[in-house]
Image 1 (cartoon, rainbow, N blue to C red):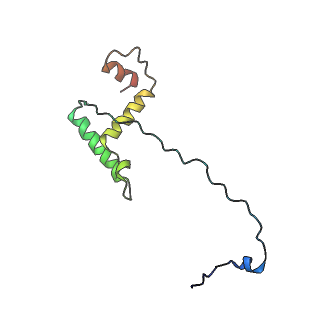
Image 2: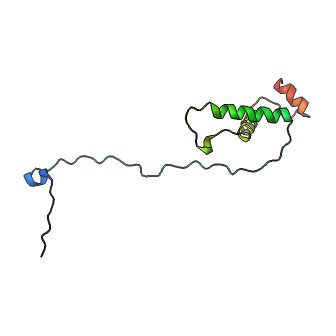
Length: 110
């Protein structure tokens, strides 16, 4: 027959009862994950200088990082286009007056 050795804390052996301290409250809900919008493919035509600029600028942004960046956080030309869309959405353009790209350029003062 084997004996089981029971481990006790020093306070348990001394007869001293520990004061009950409130348990640190744990969050009752899990942190919410931010749902990302599903990505869709858009086929656009841009000029060669625009493509060159997008590629070079995205590369410059990636090179600004001193430490490696995870693939999901790297900047590529499509990310710059997404930011450009956000800029257009938040601009003071009167879309009811825009009849052409030239009208848009004028309102943006480009």
